[in-house]
Image: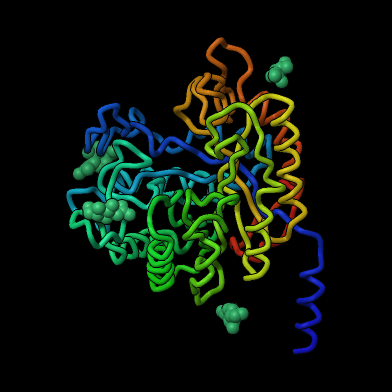
Length: 385
Ligand SMILES: *[C@@H]1O[C@H](CO)[C@@H](O)[C@H](O)[C@H]1NC(C)=O
Ligand SMILES: *[C@@H]1O[C@H](CO)[C@@H](O)[C@H](O)[C@H]1NC(C)=O
Ligand SMILES: *[C@@H]1O[C@H](CO)[C@@H](O)[C@H](O)[C@H]1NC(C)=O
Ligand SMILES: *[C@@H]1O[C@H](CO)[C@@H](O)[C@H](O)[C@H]1NC(C)=O
């Protein structure tokens, strides 16, 4: 007893550690948006034409050359569990197989970790005008809405299929917003319960409300900070999933960085500390200018210095961006964090000007390369020779 208490105090006073670092792979959620918001647009969609999860050559560069060990892989609930049969355990097996192929490439072939990312804003049944369309999961006033129990059933099924892969991390939901925080908590809890009931002990990361924005965690009349710590996980292997953009409205659409995370995360960081929780920041980004260079650098250092943060993925790489930009360019086309990406004029892309120039040098030299993904991290090592 005494020895373990002593060990625990030594461990907790050690310097803060990032175990997992990489990029979000955005592309599995592509092909459904329609200007007139027509429900069903792009569903189910053709794999490799309308949407795709990863480009293997891009993953190769990010792992072999850049030594990244974490990829967050987006998919759409409506493709995995088609609307015709509803949210739950009936999957489109063809779609699932394509998804599993991407997850296995990252985790088995390359030995990195993968976050499964249902990119659905806690909504299901109409992704045509994301992030606003579709019924809020668990909205009992909406007869067309999937229930909280169905969300649990879905996660139980998905988790069971990846339970034997210790490098898979379950990201419960991308950016819930404009709903009661209590319902976010209930849906998260249903998913955690179903995942553990399925026998999966994998690391879970769960979002808060308000786009899971770190700066907003303790703000407003229904803040995440008031209740989000009330979840229970029998295995104590659940961390918090936070997003944080640096522009004026925290949307990641503008090229100027003016909202300093090192200041704006103070409240959520003390909330994490108070409740003894760890966090991943799975979306953030910036443009190619001096203000963003400095702020991104300080941001990564902030995560390095605060024990509460154990992993991050920047937004975004992905197979289908072309010269379009996922983040932070005032809608100009400077490409993405996908290796080989080019700006629309053929010039350097965000991969060259932001990833390689600013973020890559801040990737820790030692990360976790083997063993189970966990809130307590694992053994740190140099990239496997
Ligand atoms: C299942 O997914 C595949 C791959 O995208 C698609 O071609 C097929 O039409 C889908 N089937 C159903 C029933 O949605
Ligand atoms: C729940 O559904 C009702 C009925 O459709 C709707 O008025 C309400 O806005 C929905 N709530 C949320 C949070 O979307
Ligand atoms: C989880 O944490 C609680 C509270 O600290 C503790 O009582 C419990 O034993 C832990 N369970 C496991 C499986 O570690
Ligand atoms: C953007 O990146 C290019 C190429 O690295 C560089 O020459 C240029 O000065 C950068 N622009 C700004 C505004 O920093």
